[in-house]
Image (cartoon, rainbow, N blue to C red; front, side, top):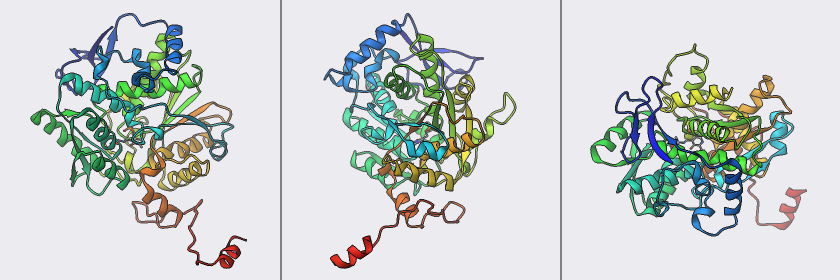
Length: 434
Ligand code: F0G
């Protein structure tokens, strides 16, 4: 199978070898994607082979990404693979959340079960493997927290140096703590995500550091595995809808590519509709899909949301994401801070939990069901992108009525669960619990 980088712009489609260090098309500046030429193995053969691999102890087969390596065959030599046994995340039925959203049934594909607690690990294992293949010594990213935590872990596992750039004061402590613990050189820049990405693109070129943001097409290849594993878990029966939060729109691009390729290979019979949910203070993609055909994304200059993971005003992958949403007959919705916070508490009450950005999914589904876009009897899977422990500060403030929205108003603790201070006295505590 021949793997090449191809420019995503239909007017260009220039091709480059996969061993060139490129993040955008040198001809036209367009986004790049990995494209394969050759004959794919038969769907039935792959499905059987992947099932058999689940029973094996080899690190590659224990990874929920590399088990499906036939779908991203850019690595010829698997000794380059850097794995922390990522993927293998469950699909959890959530009746309480389903009824909150007005659905009969709802499944959560929980990417928070990954080694560093977010879906970024699915992509990072591929991105860092490519860095190793290319012989790079240093890797870098700008991040709202999860990419940096993941990159720091995989880089250290591979013996590479990692340099992370984060918006000062705008990521959760859980994520910052992870980067420090995994040994990343950490720069807290006094600018927002979008501004820092522009800065890091210049620096990566100047200093010869490998960039691992989601403009890196190999990360997107790895994130395809989230959809592949989901379909495997569902015995290759596609749901009606896949719902996910949208920030920089890398995941939307990856899911769309995965679904198209799986349909093309005959692994699934139909493509589910993608529903991308943004926070209302950082929703440029929501605005874009309401513009006439051919419009370009207008960046939100000062994005605002407590769901800091998706506090992004100028998502780089919008051209890919737009194509994927359209190709799937999908939609884009936006939700308020209050809606995200309440949905998050509901996911917690299911015994599942997630970080704020992930909860945008449930809030969005509720809105889409109410509007009649999603029917209550449809088969819906929402992707929870990050672990509940990523942002404990948000949780404590919500439950105690101290969570303040960016506009200065307090979020109502609709499903608040205030801890009680109790005296060291059995009688008094017994009375309290009566
Ligand atoms: N959910 C979580 C928990 C995230 O960390 C992110 C992105 C998203 C959703 C949005 O995904 O960017 O592919 O549309 N976090 C990035 C980061 C930007 O730096 O960790 P997207």
